[in-house]
Image 1 (cartoon, rainbow, N blue to C red):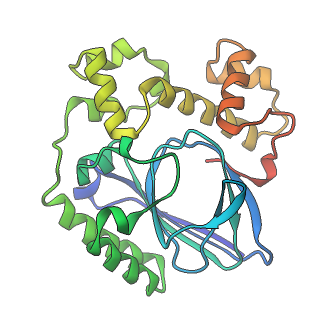
Image 2: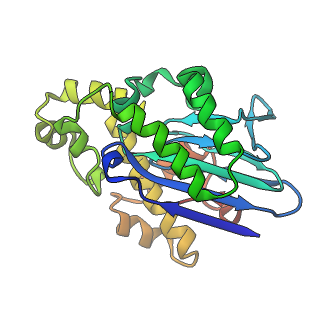
Length: 261
């Protein structure tokens, strides 16, 4: 059994939150999957069996709820039977603006949400744990987020519109900084606070993610075709990103057991 549900946020939260996701799967034996870098920052909740991530040569079970900033490396996961995941996906920079916490403080991994955000998120986690459906989870999440939004930390600036535009990777750093009314150095500093990575790395992740989605959706499409479709200069640039972000090469990467979206 496999079920995925999605819902847009309340209008009052749209400047911070992109979407809510609910995923349930019951596949029998635990399934090992590779999670490639996706342009996303989110808070994850695991109301049932929790996944384990591969760190330091072994799989380690995650906390009940985790913050995941922009990932820059493949993460191998062991997804258990009877797996349920609910997540709040933030707009680029939305988490930083709502909570006032620079994502640059977090490592490239799964951070215990309760350790960072304290008792209010612990209460939300318990409510989600005891919820029986997606609608109730969204209801509790929005109540928590509305309370935060009534006293959010960082006002919306031109950079927040700039970094959420479509196909961000097609623009130069100078153009993005100019549109955000910032110098290149100011833009990079503000961008790192909002995402945890530099603008150039983020643009490469965006482009690489597009290439991976093309290949996942159309396995018979050649890498040459994908290179041109996405806008890579040549296949060597795509291969460079593939190696950096997945620690492997296209010919041996297991697309059937990869999380790509």
